Length: 153
Image 1 (cartoon, helix red, strand yellow):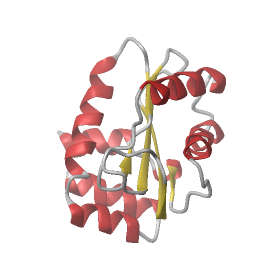
Image 2 (image 1 turned 135 degrees about the vertical axis):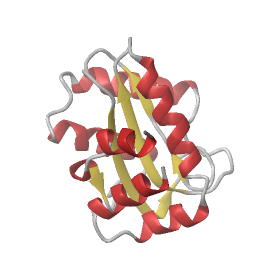
Image 3 (image 1 turned 180 degrees about the vertical axis):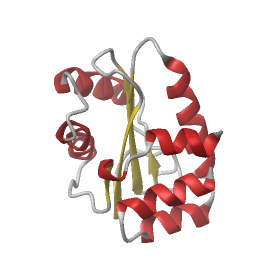
Image 4 (image 1 turned 45 degrees about the vertical axis):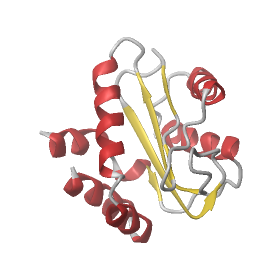
């Protein structure tokens, strides 16, 4: 079930192997652009508002080089996930003060929290594994990133 869930929400065209941004705010803008360029956001401004509002309340920089900026808005119909890698790291005000190398943007409908909560819990569990994180950072294609995550689920 979990692998099927990840296959349904992760799309290679929403994965960037090399994030260009050098600041936390620019990284979030770049992640939002991934979804916007795929024409998945009805209202980019609203998506930005909810993600930055959440980020101001508390940094979504986790530990082990992971950041999961996220927000909920009715400007999307279903759970959306954008992934970007920054192998040399970016300061995301993480709990452990490490630079962030794997960024996962999650945007979901305001009134359908089940998939959002499930994704956040499952991806956090998967990314606790150092081998999985290393394999993601070495991936040669967006398809490989998706495959690594799905197979680890």
